[in-house]
Image 1 (cartoon, rainbow, N blue to C red):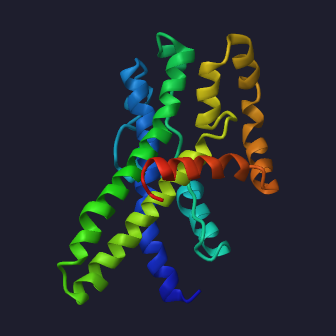
Image 2 (cartoon, rainbow, N blue to C red; image 1 turned 90 degrees about the horizontal axis):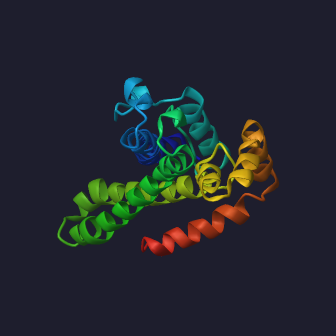
Image 3 (tube, one colour; image 1 turned 60 degrees about the vertical axis):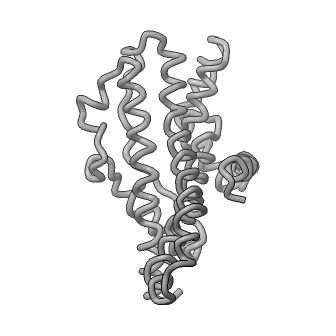
Length: 222
């Protein structure tokens, strides 16, 4: 991939990634705050300021590494997790699940909004613009919004893998009976190892791909 093309692709995907992962984490903290846990607010994490959420590896190095290794075909990242203290909730089991669900739901909302802007604003506007404006402004906007759809759907789908500490694991714990929920919670210290194994062996795609196809259909992106 040429340097100029790499720079262009990074410019197109950087903003959607940043918006997706920051709002994902802010949603967790905001919902937790509304349910009685002020931890994220007290620690200054209910802000859209990227500096408060950037994780050097997850937000910067990993997306760049994936971009280079996959020739720009796959980019993924994450922000610093928002701190939540479930002991501040009236119903810790239920409210933790609700807070966890807020992240993926926010990403799906962003993907749906991107589809709406594409279909009903940007693409129709291209018919009234000069070729020069289309090339310089409309085409990059289409590429950025398309990237936003893909990134947000991937982020939502990946986080719904039902293994704690991912959101899917925490949501599942909220639905399971107490005994089974506790058993699943005991996997959390080994959760990232399990997730890495699922990704490395390709088994994760059997969870992620059906979810991505479902979400793409639901938001009208297919």
